[in-house]
Image (tube, rainbow, N blue to C red; front, side):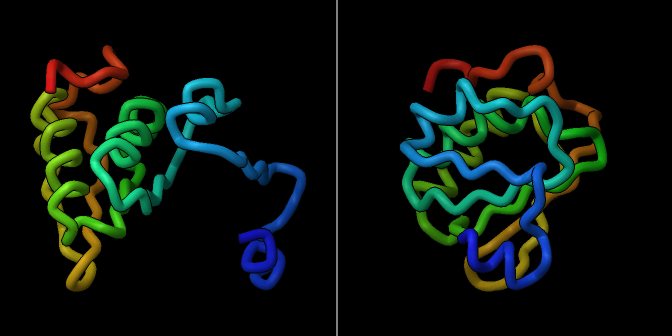
Length: 119
């Protein structure tokens, strides 16, 4: 990961790499606001952990990209999170596996509560 950031000239003092499981690192991550979130969690738990901890920090007009939406467990986590937070922004396919949406700020309660309703 570090090499890719260096290769494209993106490694600067603002980049922080967090080593560990999403459930352990994301709740205490020093993040206030995000313009782009790119998820590659594969499984339900890792995807929902990332959404719970990061999506409330996504700015209006920011983008959420999900690499593994083709995987049933990942797709279910995304749908559960979106449903429990009233997120209705259109999901747009990227390729056979990935999707994205742009956060409109309309119809979303994610800013109010970072946790999904009972799963």
